[in-house]
Image 1: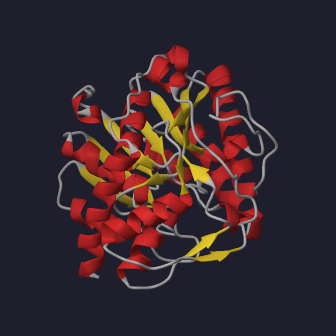
Image 2: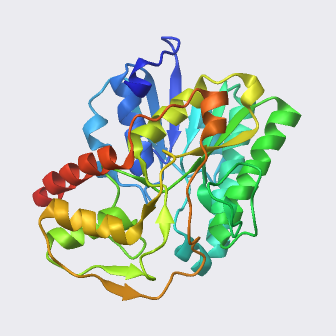
Length: 327
């Protein structure tokens, strides 16, 4: 099944930055389950200690509290590391519009610190989170690498800049970098709370609580919602990819297209709720339609996602029903 069949040298050490976040904690869990040594770096600004507390008694897991904006911290974290999975960043398009300076500081300077530390410490592969937001206003569907439009938010700009640094670090210094353009990742441990929460966990939490969710816009916007296990596979495939594929960006999705209003009604059915949504204004900086061509990742990384939307959302709903009930 997917990533669990992949193999690395026994002495491999993985550094997961942003490891206490949604995607990062799932990477830490998967790699420790596979028996590899994992170092988790997080400053807990958006990540949560509770996401990784269950890993603390595993001998092959180490937590480092630190900030990627500090080069010394990055150097220490990269010491003796084989593979860096750089997930540390601040997400959310709307929040980036409110805080552009902070996004530049964390998402651009922080990522550059990590690349520089990885280069100096002799890391084999540097895999980092990019975003489908880099496609901006380009109208073509599905989205294809190399066909990007005008950027619509500071968040999207930070990810585009990270990709350009990745190209340069490969070309100038020989660091094998791989930019993974995530498309609307969802699944276990994604935060359902807060003003900037992702839409699927937010809807699930509100429906379970009997609240009436708000859909921004008319609900006809479409997305390539991508289950977390597909993203884990993509990160590990990139670590095993040839140097010929380095310096490139790859769409990481399933290759489907779901409309938000349809997802809402599907969640209502799955949770046994009959609650009509409210409709609010469209969010500034949002792309109306987004789905991915994943052919490049298939060809160059060997990426072959196991979970379509139906399989992923079923697993996610079960996880939230169990874990939100505990809260």
